[in-house]
Length: 388
Image (cartoon, rainbow, N blue to C red):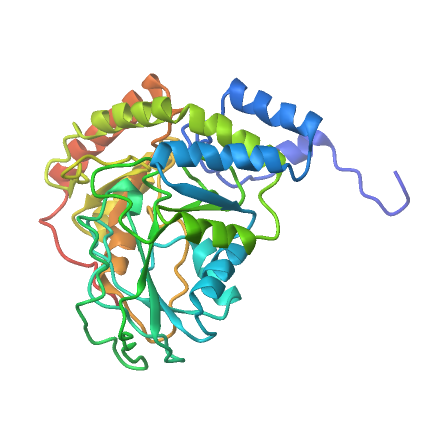
């Protein structure tokens, strides 16, 4: 030990007061559903062609085409995908695309990278569906060229309605965005649905995001689908390169096992749907024609009750959080009450194919114990979900 260093006996260190550690998370909120077959497919591709492989990309696209019965093109980045859409439809920089705050940040960043403005709509706090007409940004006033509609948390939006007909006041510092003479292009985000369901796939283009905690956690890139074959071929010509070979190989393996993954998620969701919350919250909708369980979230009666359950489960080593895992980048001066209620009252529970039966049973038992104790000790519900 060099001069000037101070030697501290281990016994002295042991006697130092230590902060209370946070209980370890033994059941994470999200765990990638990778299997041995997925790993072997990726390693095999790395050994054969570790970088761009046109054959692997075409196989990846073909998998989506068989599943959705339409043409597909895969992009290595969201920026290039939306740039190709912008160029193909002749949109100008400064034009507007109507979105809602639950849309994945990867798409919002891609809009901004292509000099397109996002116009925000509020959401229903229970279903997450977009409400009303688009809200303008605090700056900019282009025409609305497209509407991104999606199916939050795997619950299909009823019908192909784009949701742009209704209008409401955007509040101080924002202006309504005028609609063009022709109807906006409907871009349908299907990442939370993944597979066809009745009424799904009505948009001009379907978009699949493959980044983040998804049912198909490929980790990079996106896929665009459409029944319009010339449109997809025109988009393909504007693509500089497809996703890398390992990502495509992993995607093909994940897509092949998709039915089993969805079946397991539905089985776990069925157990949660039997929860007894004693009036402290409500269970999510199952959808008129079914749904995909990207996640499972409870809607608690108020923010205080939601916080109490979250802390109780976290102390038990169970991961849980708001279903809005990112902070929406709203312009200053725009308040969305529905989004605020969803962020403060909704609680997502672990739901992934890798969740074991004992783990799901433990989650259910802990929630039942909390509901029994908390329900007896708390005053009647009060509403504190309105924005400050």
